[in-house]
Image (tube, rainbow, N blue to C red; front, side, top):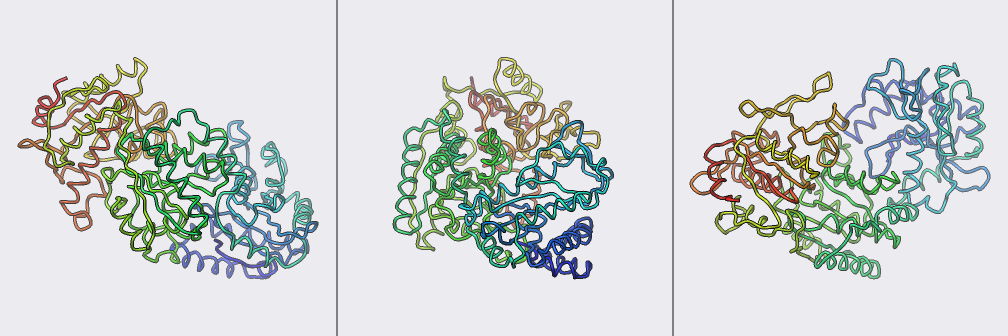
Length: 622
């Protein structure tokens, strides 16, 4: 959980280059890559200054946890100082954010954003808010500190800032115990502050407590989550949705009593209420004080849930994780782990940023099952759309059996997307060849409309008219066109070109590009209608009216759909060894199943292929 554990005395007397070499060696060993030159320079210049100040303060034996990795995140704090509180004698910690800035100003009058002369990348978060967030997170997830409300403090140190006027704007943000602000000018005040938090004793025991702490949401965080999530009025559970919730609640209690593990698998199609179940469980179990987290494999889905569920209290956002954040989680640290969109589970959590110590070949499903007494998998296996995704009921149950863990299954028969039309869901599955029954014509359903457009312009016009009537709408397409980065001027490239009609894909960025929303929020934020979404940004979401462009990778021939691999541009599908043709055929059908089932009121379909359009007209006679 930390790149280097040492003492202030050792750092103060060490050669800076030797210190950096030691950190680089640890970085390469733990994470498998080297940091940028700027970060190395920061270590070389800032760590010795802080260590010398600590030694001058008589705190040379305080432990320095350098590049402390916040549990279950990818974020790192520059330094956590571990020692003994001079008044209480209890473990005490100071989170330190080191900045080499000599000057900084508020960004366009906003005190929470900072501009730093000569530093690329645009405005930065005010470092006091940054370190305060680190303190709050550690307090929320390091269970060893749960009953120690005064154990954490935080400070920012701009040791190169020797002109108070050059950083005067930064003093506009109110300070607190977890967010103090010091510069080279106020070094004396910083030393006084540190002496109020740390005694001149060795910090080994305190460091051990933090580094060995179980990782789980604190009772205070659970209370906040319960207030934010549990009482949402849209959570109306019906039928097997309520059964699933009741079964999970029972399993949590039984697992606690018997000190055992149980697995719940909940399966259901689009709109069957899996995410409503997930959020209901998160809120109810938080209210009961159970240690619970929510996780998905989708950046778009996770970030949207963070925004929706944690819009009034950002601390709640920390309870929404990704599947690959449990690689080093403690066994059964959680009472329950809610795995939404579990069909996105991958074979392994390892990527190019994974530190070497975690490159063990361990299966992701094993990490997730291990992390909680009751892992809950909510999935639709017909939404497996990427190579390497392996979250099917059969795979999960087989692995659970291998571990000797009891599994219970709930099938959600109801569905609430597509106007609640089970007929439409069945029709889509049949025309895509995802069921044994042959394709049939759409017979119509008063709850849901299905239309065919003869051009992309007509499809867009129909949807735009629906938005004028107050409906939400989005356009999506199969991944059959290139996908460019945004231009330097902040505009999107119109990559989806069909005859004389062209539109851009949704933005790749996590920030707005012009009027286009960030990629994770394309399906839900204003401005998303002007772009074409792909399966990775649409999956998990719904809107009133759904426009689907079937590209040349799926064509209707001789009474059924056939896949055309060469027409697909998805880079995940390029490798024919990893994704053989029969696997591609299944995945591309699942992609269009996802795209065709996003609408709540109606769907408009257009195919780039004339023969396919003619077949759709015969199949859809509304």
